Image 1 (cartoon, rainbow, N blue to C red):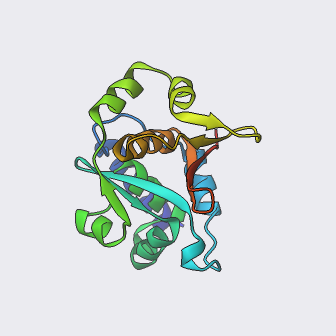
Image 2: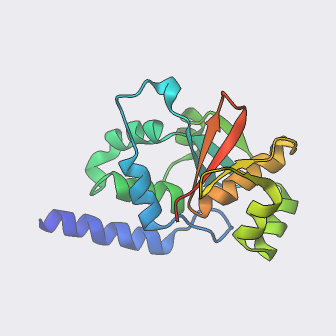
Length: 180
């Protein structure tokens, strides 16, 4: 019991002193809790379409919950649970660049125009500008005719504002689901 409290205090101090990207957006604790509960290790790896975005230096790495869970299993003794590990990865620059490169499917840099647009507008403006509505409440599709770097930057900001981002290979679209 005492050991868990010490780990928790160390983790809280870690959160306070370190920050991820220069961007001030962080994923909420509730969002991360939902993410960690959505991990299904029984699915084949190819069926995992939920995209996880991790910022390190000026790069954004695209990975999956499963790959992050594999890293967590190696470092499990240092964390109370997967939630605390995931919070540290998404919001506090926990992983090294080597770990991210090894466990990511894509890497990109943010488009400066999208960064400025995001900083000057609400998330609703970003959704209205870059997404199409679907027939399901809280579900959107990223517009197809966008430049790849713009798409990547938009979905990164949506993810950092607690939206699930999925790649739908059948439709050839990014699916955005509001988890707020």
